[in-house]
Image (cartoon, rainbow, N blue to C red):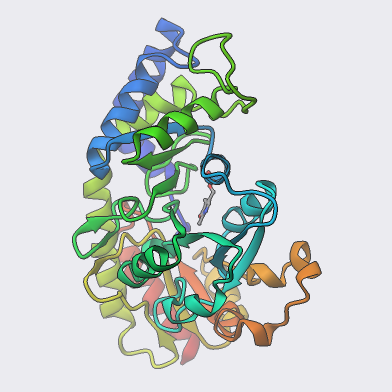
Length: 367
Ligand SMILES: *Cc1c(COP(=O)(O)O)cnc(C)c1O
């Protein structure tokens, strides 16, 4: 039985008429850039998240960069981010002209460790990028309190946390703004690159929109220099066709996480993911900790079960950050986790048989 890491084709097949119609609709109306599909997607995504504004853009990396720029973050400033994430969470800080400051992850929840945050704040700190990694929310009460105390902008990187919740409140609603990615493999995925910013701040929304549209809200009236970062009509129409299913897909992910948890319970070499209390985990990834990871991956691969490591190297230890002079001892949790974590296949169409097969294969490996 083949178990792919994600199966984008299964999802397409389940929605083929809607998707094909959406694509044809854009071509027929030539609404390739801007137009009704983009506007409608922004409105409906904002409604689903429960936020006033959604500003679409070309991808999730751009949305972080645009936010940092429009919050006035630049040279001489520091922005705190987390040691285990995708590089967008830190490269955009540098790209905006500021300096990334890395904080280790929580040993139980694998997202930013709120207990280490205050020690990382300096007089130059301007913002925190809270990454809700794997679909697991950060400890928002503590983060919110520290951001108020030190007057920092709280930016949420929600690329892996569509519809995740902390105490009943959705990801993207805690900070000054949230950043989403609709990369194909994300919980809501386009058929190419796509992203957006969500915020309740009217002025910030307008600024981000202007910056992402060459600094002009009205054609040829460029108030500032900006960039070209747009969600295109085809991607917007595809996302619109998929959006009504996001809640049920998210529930399906949680259900599959339960199946895994039950099936993996008797394997002592495996540590299943733990949900932070009072949160709703959207399981973008189902990450276990395991012993003899590479051997296990090879064993599973021989049985056509695809697994991935998110991420093999903590960000500050990548070659790109060698100039910071950091060592594994500076990020003991991320460094240890980077050797033990393994993302198992996780997508809404994953069958109970596939989950059982993955669990049985893991069991067979340790026996
Ligand atoms: C995917 C991802 C991004 C970037 O999104 P793109 O759309 O690929 O640019 C940023 N942060 C995190 C945590 C991600 O997983």
